[in-house]
Image 1 (cartoon, rainbow, N blue to C red):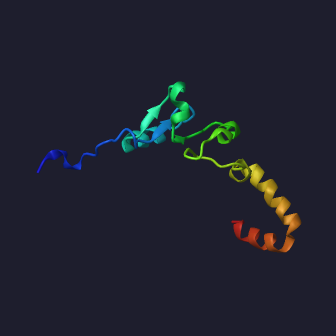
Image 2 (cartoon, rainbow, N blue to C red):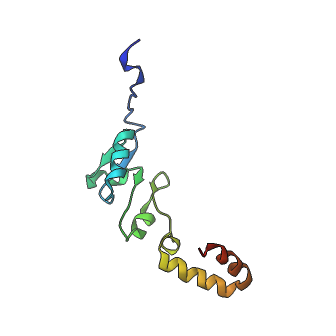
Image 3 (cartoon, rainbow, N blue to C red):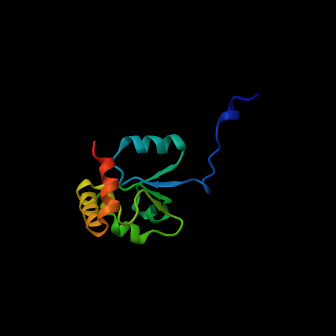
Length: 111
């Protein structure tokens, strides 16, 4: 048996292209390299990327420009639940609209 049996062949036509310019976490880039995905930092090829990992606050323009075959690590409106202050504001609004049901659920969150 050959030692090359466990090595994966990378088919460049099916290879995932990962846009790296807006990713600031090394652990993400390490995993992308481990998976054998193509790291792209050349703006000429930015529109060809399959996956965008965006760690910056202004993501709305990126989300609007996505093609159906492209994926991003965010979704529209995500800051409304991911940021504690906005989530708190939204929970307060919901409590005013639905006082009994929300109040009962919020009591379980208090530790």
